[in-house]
Length: 167
Image (cartoon, rainbow, N blue to C red; front, side, top):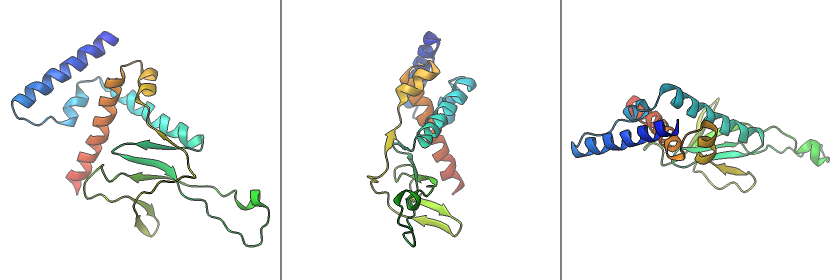
């Protein structure tokens, strides 16, 4: 399996060089198609499970140049309550905050029933965040870290390209 993935990586690299030499831009979908559909699907599934696992453990997930999966701040209502455990035990809602680096002209914000609330992302010292670990994802998929990064990175950028083409 590993030799096959090395061949795929070498093939992608050679195709990239050929396209670069011909001054034809590389399309994200072509890079993704160089991997089997099953590998791409499993990589995306493991990526989503990694984020979900962090949510269940009360942590957010940071994905550079994509965004942060985190929680809303706790709503604290002190009216009529002196028991801090009862008072502070409010459920937080999971949210995704898009990065400024993801798609140009797409502002970070949160969707609410009243529309989008835009804001600049700030460090949240009350919330633990885990940076995406491509080595862990690759290990669970039994592929090389570089291949896993290539698949996830190009899939995310493909989503960004689709957003740009719709706008």
